[in-house]
Image 1 (cartoon, rainbow, N blue to C red):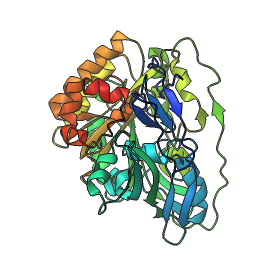
Image 2: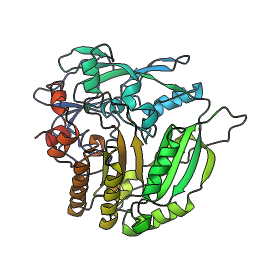
Image 3: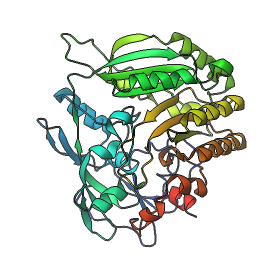
Image 4: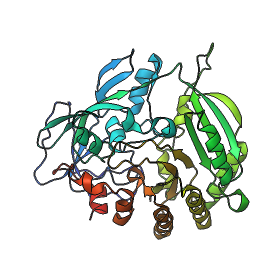
Length: 432
């Protein structure tokens, strides 16, 4: 039995037995009476990738490319292939992921299981919208080919299904064409939250990628101020700049969090004032994956780890709800270096339990300060609940079951697709 941590480095659950399928054709040889759960790269922040006392089906060796057509951008690969692996293969050939989250260190299986989203949801939807088909291996040995037209109910249950419907062995994705690896990025500052809504509405029609950094400790007239970054894939260029990814690392875990009231206020003030406004040609890595260049960055939160709180609130309540969330966060003195605010479009997600839906989503990291942090989350939950919103399971480590049921009304319908030999700490927690 082995102990595993998720990316938030919170207290580990009970140890799990690890099984590592070698090939997509392998059967699932599960020990009797133990629940199983697929485990990819461990980049979920909470316990959706934990299965204490059970079996983790580690997909690290399901890492092979099966087929890629550079004429059409259709890629088929095993589920343990990472988004980094895909980009290294396809970007030099003029293709890019249609949707990518804020890190490349995510497996394809994990991206499907959490129906990840990116900065272009208003233009392209979530990861599941660009999934052509996949194979699902059940504990019974049954193999289901799933697509929007073949086993469509299993297709919908598995997208955003938190790994509970079975093991995805391979998947086929539709990529999007690009001219080069660079992005045209427009950066502007906005002085308060009301200005964000105006900026976002003006930029979204013409810019497929939009996101804002928010100063979560600013208060008064400056509450919600931030930096807006809109982007599109760059047009062909006569000459491209040379770019090399900087390699840095947090070398050890400090005994206490390096994110505290003093460092947070200082960093946010500096980031706000030093943001360079205007247009720039930027390589895609620093735009999409600003933290991937810092190995083990999660160590900076110290031995107690950290939580991420990410919620979505619908369009008709988003302005008041986001303002109230930021007010309570600033009042608490807790917060994040990288508070992210963006809006989702109205394209309905395909998964029964998918998180993305029309509205605004706010995401912040919080050092684990025990009861003080959990009390703050209870306050934030009340705001999200009143607004009719939901919390993102991939980032969660503590939401109550009642909050999950409110945010995911199709959970009961989803339950009938769960493999009888599969389970997770998250599911047991929210469905107890």
